[in-house]
Length: 307
Ligand code: PPE
Image (cartoon, rainbow, N blue to C red; front, side):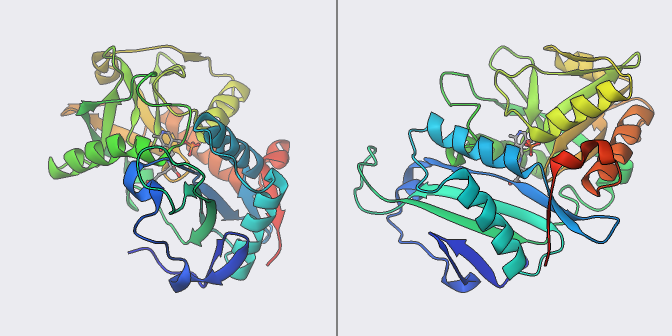
């Protein structure tokens, strides 16, 4: 169960959590044409709070909407302000932020007509996405029987609600088979991403991650690539096969929710030593320093707010 907060920002105003409801003929509920974001705020080491890469997340929300022909009836600045206001209204020093833009009720049928575009922003506390031990010990992953989107079937650069049908199926399958998470292959058979994470492998000291075809352009992916380059690691964006993953020295998932989660097993093959590897661990440590404001070099990635 999501831990309730007091308020949700809904179409321009803060309303009580229990009143942020929609009609059953909400267009997006039927056809999936909506866009959303997943953002985290962290309590910094100096006692302040900051939203991590807020601008980039809001930019991606607007890009996702553009791809789906949705015009968000607010400016980027207004959405940024609303996100901060929601955190403040809920007295959230840290937590997860979920803005969603969706098509409301009015017309039914595939074409959304001029149904209203509605915007909501919810916040709630969210700990380690894949379980408390996952960040430390790593997780067990299975290749999914579901294939990630073809670039002309779904718009893979949009963080669109409908795209997640594929993720939900993959995640349910992985869990039902006793794994923690799924890794999905792209339509050509190469490794793409997790149900809600990007993927990296480490081999002979360098990092590899799939290029931006079938996958979401992850903001954590970008942060990790930047941090890795800074730490002197070579990072290549290149397709790789599932068996290349089996023989990697290390592998890990990245995502706002998942942060940097080591992968210790794929399809019953132990990865490396079957625990968090040194490169992934180093990047995870650096990432947590950055989000908590301990690395001043990346201060521009933090949007500080007061409570
Ligand atoms: N791929 C997918 C499919 C994905 O959903 C996410 C984020 C990523 C990659 C990583 O993107 P980024 O967060 O910008 O680094 N998934 C979000 C939703 C998870 C959920 O269960 O809901 C998230 O991490 O917030």
